Structures are given as C-alpha cells and as structure tokens.
Length: 407
Image (cartoon, rainbow, N blue to C red; front, side, top):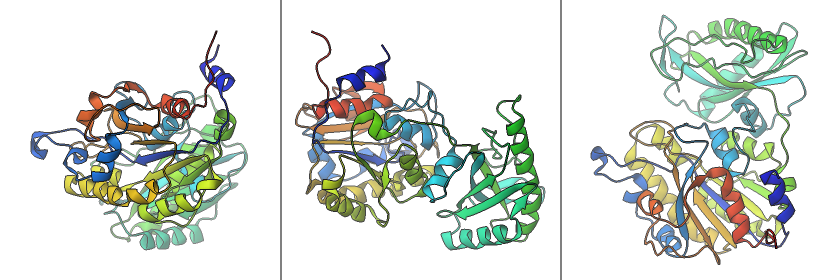
C-alpha cells in the first residue's frame, strides 16, 4: 500500500490544534571561530529551554543525505510533501506569495537585482540588499518599458528587498528552465535552457527570457548598485493535492515574506496578511486560534543572517523570537514543533545539507530530559534522525489523529 494512502486511511479527524514554527535556516555548525558553539547554542533562550525540558528532540534530513535544499523543497518537506515527488519552481511560489494569479501557460521566475561590472560579471548577487522602495522603483521602470515580449505578456511585481517576480503569460509556454543565475559572484549570468530538451514549449519560454534580458539590461545599465538581475526557479504551476485533503485539518499561514506565503498558498493554506514582526505574528495566531487547526508560522531572519555569515545577528534573531514566544504560549497548541526548513551555517554563508534540529512538544511527545533546544541536544534526542516529510505525521500522531494499524 502507498504510505500516504495508509496515513489517510488511519486518520481520525479531531479538534487538536497544531503549530509548526519555522526559524528559517535555523541549523548551524560549530567551528573554532565561533568558539565551538552554534548561534542556537550561544543564544539566551529561556522560553525555548523551558519547552525543551517538556518535549522530544531530533534532527531532520530535508531531502536526502548530502543534498542541500532550496527553501521550496525545505518547506514542502515540512508540510509532508516529498520534495523529490513534488518539485515546484521558486518563481511559482514567489508569484503566488505576491498575490499573482497563475493561469495555464504562465511561466514565472523568481528574480533579484544584482550588481554587474563593465564586463557583465556578477560582483554582488543581492545588489547590497537594496531597500524595498528601490526595488519597487526599478520594477516600475521595467514594467513601464516592457509590457510584451513577442506574443507573451510580461508581468513584473516587486517583492521585499532586492527580490521580485517576472511572469510570462502567453500560449505554448512551460518550464522548468535552468537558472539565469551563476549562484556565486565572479561569473557572468548564464543563458537559460529547457530542462527537457525535447519540449518545444520550454524552448519558446527560454527564448522569451533571453529577449527579456536583452530589453531589460540596457534600462538598468546606469542604475547603481542594481544594474542587473538574476532569475531562477523558472517554471509553471504543477498540480498538487491540498493540505486539507491530505491531513483533514484547516491550515493557516503567518509569514512576512512573499515566497513563504506562496508555498503555503500552493498547498491550500489561508494566508493571514498584516503582521510584520514575530510578536505580531504570534498575536495574530492567538486571535485566529479558533479558526484553524494547523498554523504555519515563518520567521526569516535566522536564514538571512546565516547567509550573511553574521553569527552575532543570527544569535540575536533567535533571542528575539524567544522573547516573543510567551505570546504564542498564552494559547498553547496541543502539538508544537519548532525547527528550520534547512540549515544555513554562518561558516557556509548559505544553505547546507546538515540535518536541522527539531523540538516536538505535546502531552504525548515524551520528555527527553534535555535542558536546552540545541543541535547538540537534538543529536541525543528520542526522535533520532528522520526525513523532514515525516514531521507532519509525528505531529498528527501526537495529536491522536491516527487509528491503530492492524489487529
């Protein structure tokens, strides 16, 4: 029997409340330069410590051993969707998060402004993390000048900071395409290619993007530091079963950044707009407690500072979340999972393959008798090391949502 089908057969709908609290890129590694501590270990976290003393810990593999995940696969795994089975382009996720409606034949790309030298070499992939207002101005410039490429409509929408989305709407288009992003400084922007070389629709989409670059780069040539842009996750929207269909729960999402709203929307979660700080997100959770069974709460800054290699700032971001945690605990869910979608070690300045720590707290989670929630503690926790796609199933089990299997 298919394992998902078995879980569905065993599911018992009840009134349990669950919270998945994701500190993006939470996991880290201890190095000599960091006094052999991770930011989570160095942080002062009295509220997480108290939870750790009442729950179980472990480590999760986001995709497969040794594979470094993007944010899309990392979160889909946390939602219980095997990221190897459900592959979704980042452009689709970002477009949904920004409120764009995707239609059949639409191809979306996640883009960000960058800095190019006189030879077209990428010298800063994030253009110094320009402010959102600058991004909005640049997107307005491009949108005003480029409304169509060939027979395809071009829709451009700014996100946060240096990020934006480009959507191509026309006939005979599909993805996925390779990235127009070298993924590191010191190289030129690569030309996109169809992943499926036999797809005429993908070939047409790739040609459109090359023409878009040819039209857009001259418009940005004198803009500093954002005189170029990168595109990745270029794809169309796939079919995917909804969260409520799979798990018999009403899901709600509290996220600030568009991509994570898009991921939630992709699987049918309701986006709750408005909150901008983690304290505001927790306050909204309390206000909406009766309206949803499952809450996905996303916190970006641990990942952001990990990518910057800023140990002190990542540590402080963890402490800031911990300080706000009593707001959430004022309406304590039946099951609470605290984790990351992947690791973002400060030493690596990017995502990595290292299993992320996870803390699971419920009436039935068991007590590992660990004093703190850390990578070191998680290594000895009763949850062990498991695939992230099973976290939702452990949460359901802790909520008494499964009948007994067999006689």
